Length: 123
Image (tube, rainbow, N blue to C red; front, side, top):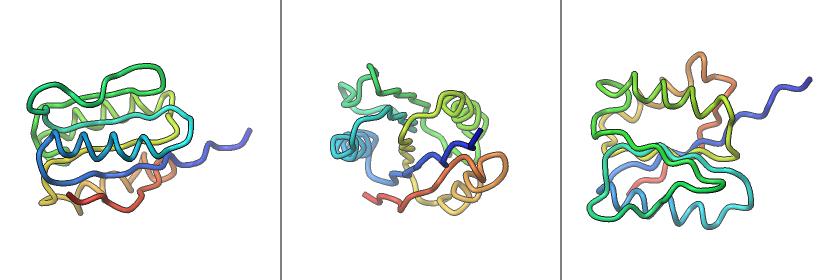
């Protein structure tokens, strides 16, 4: 049995939670068919743009660095997503301050062969 291809994963960095969510919604609209998972740091101001439904899994976490204080939440959530991998994963992060550390975490075991990091979308 062939190993599954690495999951294309895009980090969306900066601006407010609403702007990150809108950028991800725009990117998803340009994708072909296939399930998408979104992990968002922080809550939008007002009504969320992305609503979970068929083909779209949306997980929100409280604001906090996903490679530091939010590391456990991110890894548990990511591991749950990877049990039934979508076609695309987006991770919305508030600050680029720890971007290098977050990318190292996502490129390290156990994610080495599971994730394919795409170019970062900076807002």
